[in-house]
Length: 91
Image 1 (cartoon, rainbow, N blue to C red):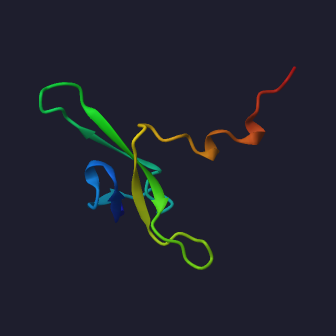
Image 2: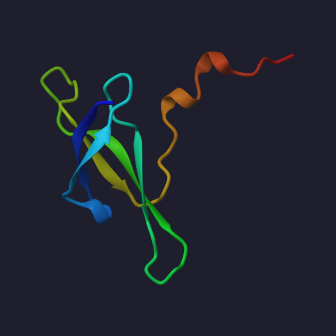
Image 3: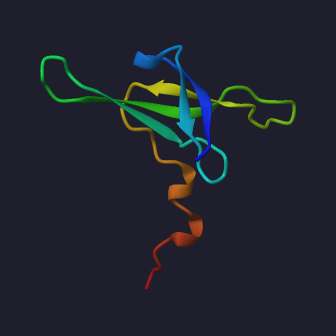
């Protein structure tokens, strides 16, 4: 499986670069979850990062990727979750 060195911005992984596995299209996953155990034995805290283009070229295409800390927890669902032709039929 291929992987890519990806930068992280904000949160506990700020400034680090980790090797993230790529999907079948050659793109990293939309979100990356980092579980951090509580040293006092409490519940594990999960930090969420969402994928953004690191830079854009002149045509507006992404040149590399970076994960940005999402302080609210889970990222919002993307536009592919609700397709217009998948509506319920009215009877």
